[in-house]
Image 1 (cartoon, helix red, strand yellow):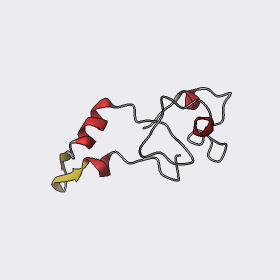
Image 2 (cartoon, helix red, strand yellow):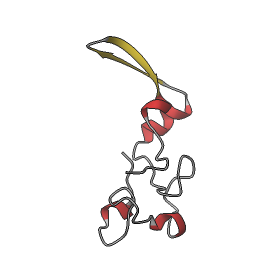
Image 3 (cartoon, rainbow, N blue to C red):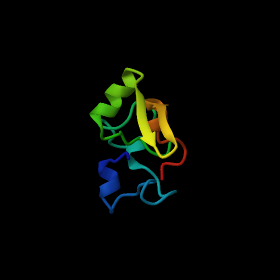
Image 4 (cartoon, rainbow, N blue to C red):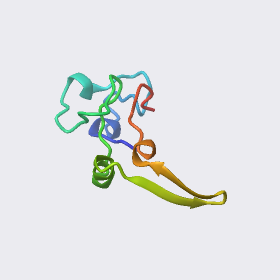
Length: 86
């Protein structure tokens, strides 16, 4: 899950915490926020360095479930914020 300082500061609006309230990082202080994969609703970054590295290398996640083994591209595993940040 993506997070940013505005999410944890309840005195500030945050579209992830309260959809439609706004995102101060979009036009305000945002030097530590997303460059790629952001939307007009939320520019928080993913907290995982490993997720970013795996995406850069086009990694594939292998898993096992009750239905048997499977594989999923890392880009389908770590989804961007998009237009519905909540």
